[in-house]
Length: 119
Image (cartoon, rainbow, N blue to C red; front, side):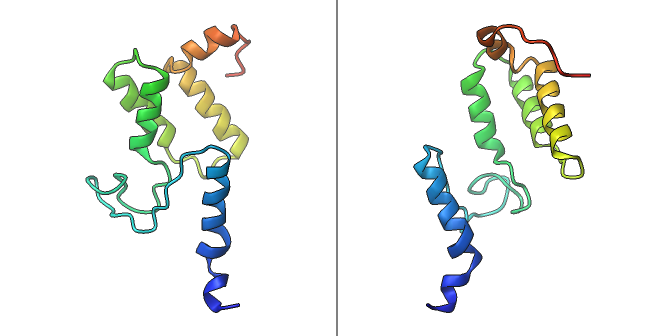
């Protein structure tokens, strides 16, 4: 084995990308990404883990009748840093906030009106 076989890219990133691709996820290896607002994915640095352009496109596909302002607000809310929160609380906050923004209206209609778990 060569030393290059023991890199983070070889041991974690490439196998993860391949696994997600095999499960039907759209993947992208952003190793050569250009960072800027006009860059490859629009991120300023690799610390931005959410690909906002792709998130917005997915929101528009799932919720085609919303205003541009609603999409912007949803992207900003979903991308807000919650790293200091307990994961379950962060997930609940996202779910409740999405409901407040009415992003999940069509999903609730399809699934039936479940009791809210939001405070």
